[in-house]
Length: 196
Image (cartoon, helix red, strand yellow):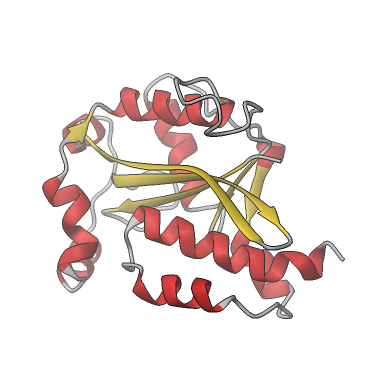
């Protein structure tokens, strides 16, 4: 089954109106041997387009970002900002598996689940962003999954592989792709116990 892990980095902690700096998506599946990554990408979103639609910026979040590593801030400092509708369309296409790719890159079946580290914030902000731009999110309400709850209610987990531990320790905190990858690894560590 194809799944999407989604992570947003924002300028506010508002659960649905935060200005989104960047968003990362990773298409994946969970196998007994470990997670299988099919595709990953991230985009920096145009801030002005969001501000004119009332997306929020908080002073506390700005201060918090100033304390984070340069590597965490790099995507939205260095990368070019994208039109918001372009990013939303890209995410739709990835979720529905409708984009140009090598024939062997990803099984051509649409995603059936979108995961986030808590659905209220990441998914809530993305759903509202789609609405702000007159679009519908590609996922249905019953396709949304919460990694944080799964991990908390199911504390038993398998140990990460040594390669997974090494990769997790080297990833940049608060970078949308690194956060997606860490969330997928954590999900996999708990997955076997849920499905056994």
